[in-house]
Amino acid sequence: MRIRSLLLSLTGAVAIASFAGAAFAAEPSAAQASPSIGVTLNGARAELPKDQTPFLRGNRAMVPMRSLFESFGAAVHYDEATRTITAKRQGTTVTLAVGASRMTVDDRVVALDAPALLSNDRTFVPLRAVGEALGASVDWIPASNEVRVSGPVERREAPSAAELSESDREIVASSTPHAIAEAALYRLYDVYEEARTVFAPGLEPVADGMAEEAPSNLWTISGGVRERGDGFAFEFTVVGADANGAYRTLGADIVEVSPTSDGSGYIVTGYGRLRVPAPLPGSPTVWTARGPHARTAPIDLTHAAPPIRLEADRTLVPIELLKRFGETKAASNGSVSVALPSGHAASFPTVVADGATYVAVSDLQNALHGRRIASTGGETYVYGIVWNDAAKQLVLHIEVYSPIG
Image (tube, rainbow, N blue to C red; front, side, top):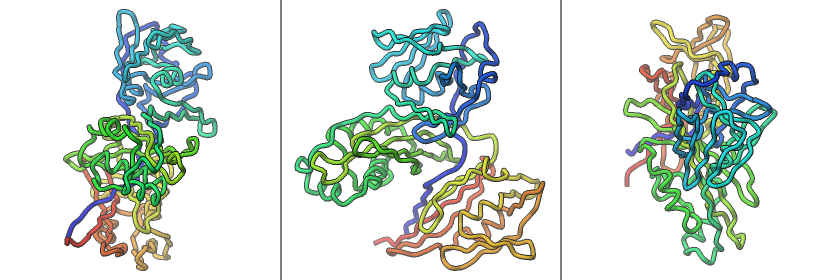
């Protein structure tokens, strides 16, 4: 039997490395005195340490310079003597000084609505001005009080179907835009070499060079989708696991697809990657899976439910987690049952602590780990429930067993 593991969606925080600026006429409480905001990078939310929390100043989003722009692939340097910040990316150089109302983009001088400043010994810069100078697009989302950063994206023109090979024409004509985009990531990260996708001429070598540093043990996670012209921009979070099996959010990708010039189907015309190194979180996290018959909406235990509870002799997870597996029903004896996609039910004893209801991870593993979900196309899907005690991570995934030959 051949086994592969699918980890296709997650909940948890994205942590970004810090940038320590030189001491300067301080505004140590600038972030605290101004409204804090959220930042998403290609759809992945950035959860920064408290001393690097983005904030609004004069209606402009201020963000930690090195943390954000190194994720763009920019090289960032701070000159303490001149209090000058320089960011370089693919031939573009952005230079600005702390307190200055202007910045230089290559040989152009650009006015700033808000100057760079130091807060808590961190260098903060206006996100929109510097981000757009480095090729990203920046949008303010008032409903969620956050800034959405997309790109930078390398783009190529879509050819006509007549310019493609016969096999590529068949793929373009028979694949949905999302399938084309997802398969592009599979190919770039060597997850599945035979992925059915087609790149615009000249784009694949550039995209492959951007993705080549990804770890071998890697998964992609479907994110949002936006219309772009007559095509679409798909966002994917990229996740890797280290040698100890601890999962980390590495960054976020954008794959843009557009119709061929004759409208016969869709082709990959743009690709961008934000590298977001993330240390292991300091508190327990849950990584959830998407697969056959499983719910696809992610849950975030740090916001939507009480946190994981670590006790001396057991680990408890919120009862809300069971909704990932199916419809739940409480019993009179204090237990809860879950209707599984296979048509069977699993029952769990519950624990009440501090007004919240939990189930033990050991009970979750005993009831579900290795249990069959479904069989289709000669493949059998089973649950995998793994608690990584060193990393304090609970991983819910789906293992796929398929015959060889």
